[in-house]
Length: 169
Image 1 (spheres, rainbow, N blue to C red):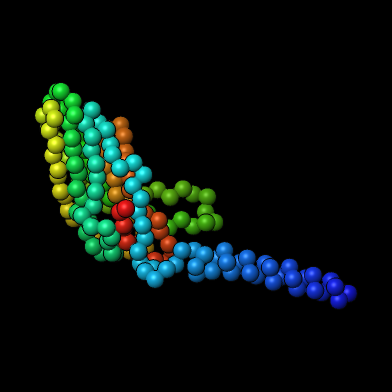
Image 2 (image 1 turned 30 degrees about the vertical axis):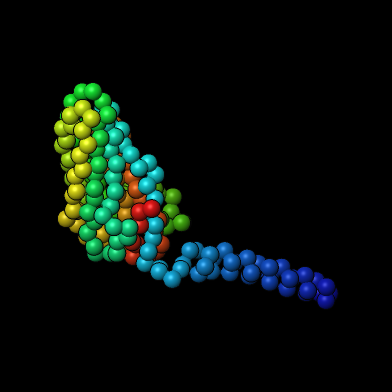
């Protein structure tokens, strides 16, 4: 083997190692000072049902494993008629995804609460509900609301071997 070939192989190996460290090193996967904190993002912050607008919020910006969440459901009826509706609040948990698996992750409901509301024309109501379950460590947590036809979910990102905290922006 020629000296130039050895240098070419060594250069390719060095570039491959550098790429691997950047892509898969601790900073490449999002580790930071607070490895326990994971951010949740509300994809669609409002739900419209029977002309009424529903917004779901949490009581604080972050949760730790084994804490309970308090949810605040705000309802507004901008229509000119009285509306009776039901909104379900839910918390789901799922295991982190295995990158080698082709099976989809199916979230498991760990808490569901039914909110029956009657709203007069132009009325606004706020309902606060504390979940009676503790948020499990090492899981992806979803907090959401739904009516009969539509579901709105705030989901967390999950890191394997990490305990998630839910943060609302």
